[in-house]
Length: 302
Image (tube, rainbow, N blue to C red):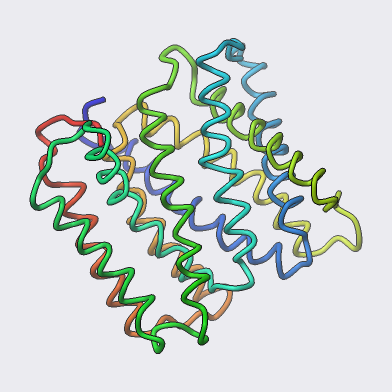
């Protein structure tokens, strides 16, 4: 899928998607602070968001067929783009500041390029490879110096928080390769979220962790409802932006997501990133710039 020149509509979609990604991390923290168990929290936001998009797709007569290509993309994207990363991020919400968790989003484009090299979908380019090294340097700047983190011993949790970024990168590559051409982004977003709800339901049944909006209605309940609505926006736009522009331009959403996430963390929770963190942001954005702008004329699909 060749990269396209961003139109005003596409730029607007990228900004909306970046803010939506960042908001999801802050909503995780609000839900955790409100006492909502993280597994049911991910289940309800998946089921509620998927149900809403499914109803809308049915009303517009845009329901997808149930065949192997659709089941494959639903199961893969449901795991890689929602259930696994959201469960992990929700679990880490009380262990790592929201602003730090969003740092990993800046590595998604770098990971996409690395995966494309591994799968031989992209030719080696020295400047892009330099972008990968800059991104890794940014991560080391956060993990190695103890003074960069708000509390001693947090480095392991921060490293664990990078796994969702890898999951997002694999997801973007698979969407570009496996998307059924005639299916709308609305229907695909619904299938992704409902598949995710199925995954989380299995985990809930295995762990016995159930919650259905019990207790006094408070911030955690509102965060769960807001996450449903936020997911409708996020997962429609994920498919739509990749359809319109391909994974390279899609990956630039992480400029917006990283800065928005750090801003939300400071605004909502009083996070105070250290000088090391800001240095890591500079290195990651420099790497992101090299990876997403170098060699674009080649028309590759990284």
